[in-house]
Image 1 (cartoon, helix red, strand yellow):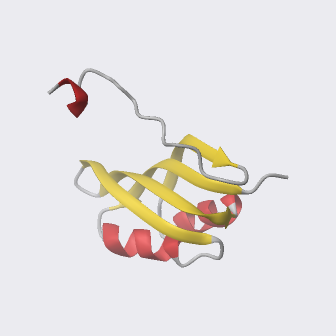
Image 2 (cartoon, rainbow, N blue to C red):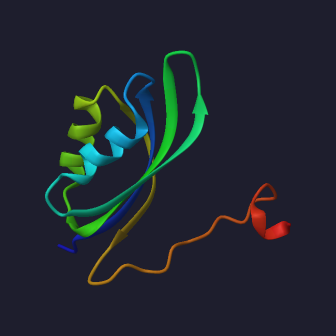
Length: 101
């Protein structure tokens, strides 16, 4: 089976858990080589982030378990890259993106 190399996840996390800590905790998993987190929306008690996870052989279930251990909830899997190499990232060209500026 082809290894998972990249996940782009829509995650709801508790506001009291720092985004840096959240990304680091996921980044400590075996097979994960890098994480990036971008804040999308913040509410009183929760924050919605996009979490990008990249590595040589990411265990999807371990990532979801870590998110839940940190008090987060996975809303959706927005992108998955599998195989021998990581394909170029698909860019979404919606009207609100910077390519129009």
